[in-house]
Amino acid sequence: VRIDENKIISEIKQVKPAAILLSCPDGYLPQVQQLASKIEKEYNVRTIISADPTYGCCDIMDDDASRLGTDLAFHIGHNSAIKRIGKRTVLIDIYEDVDFTKVIKESLSSLKKYNRLGICTISQYLHQLGKTKKTLEEAGFKICIGEGQERLLDGQIMGCRFGPAFNIRDKIDALVFLGQSRFHAIGVALSTGRPTIMLDPYLTIAEDVTPLAEKWLKRSILQLYNARDAERFGVIIGLREGQNLFKRAMQIRSKLLEYGKVVQPITLREITDERLVIFKNIDAFIQTACPRISIDGETFSKPILSIPQIEALFNIWDGKEPEVFLEKPLWL
Ligand code: SF4
Image 1 (spheres, rainbow, N blue to C red):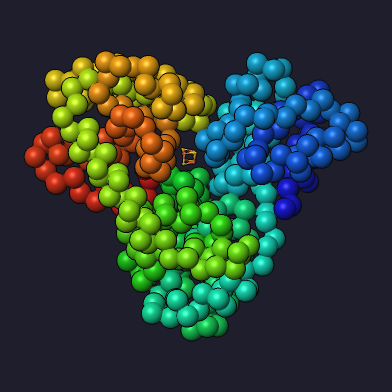
Image 2 (cartoon, helix red, strand yellow; image 1 turned 120 degrees about the horizontal axis):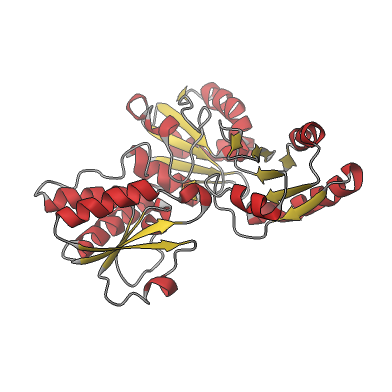
């Protein structure tokens, strides 16, 4: 794993902070710990590491940094087209230099039924796209990599943003996702509606995640129908900094009121069934924090719908078909 340390050092040299806050996904904490002690020693800067889970580039700690009196916050590990968020947060790239050559070879027999392939991946493997494209082209495939948009770089997807993969879906027969993350690969399959093959370079396995995606879609549809007759709704506003879609939550509240529903807005940082079972007089929840909380099907005792799901439920209440509600570039 390579952390873009140069970027951190150049920011430190420029801002000359007395203290900095570092946050990253759990897997990178050991490296970040080493980096923090190096920064303390070599640049005489006090470092604080956030040990809270960091799920995505939505999960910034700009307010925390301000409360702690740190001048800079480095959010490490979620490369994005946006390099700064909030007043003091700088996004720092991480690169995994694992070799995909073997798993590409392994995948050729299962990919041969497709002619045109799209390639996409998550931030830490973005630098592998060019090489993978070349290898697959040499094997006879026509390859397409979607252009970046908003926060996303060329070929990049996140757990709720799939623009570069979604936008090329009419030009391809299947998508190849680089990395060891069913979470992301299934997201690609659901968003694009195209067969998706995950190339896992660690286990050297090419896995077609399409059947799993179909299972998840069925579960999401079932949730909708379980919420269809609910009368009392809790609308959850996520309080994680980048997940706070307050306006969107209030729009949903207004719309539910128009349908004659009883609505209670609720705030939560960590959305778990344990917190929600306390609300005995609520039949179903809508959460605007992270769509994957609903779609990934951690078992909640009551229906808990994401934004695309509540939009589909509005359609059902209007007597329309729910449509292919996850086939979109953005699930927020
Ligand atoms: S909202 Fe959820 S899926 Fe989207 S980036 Fe944040 S953690 Fe990932």
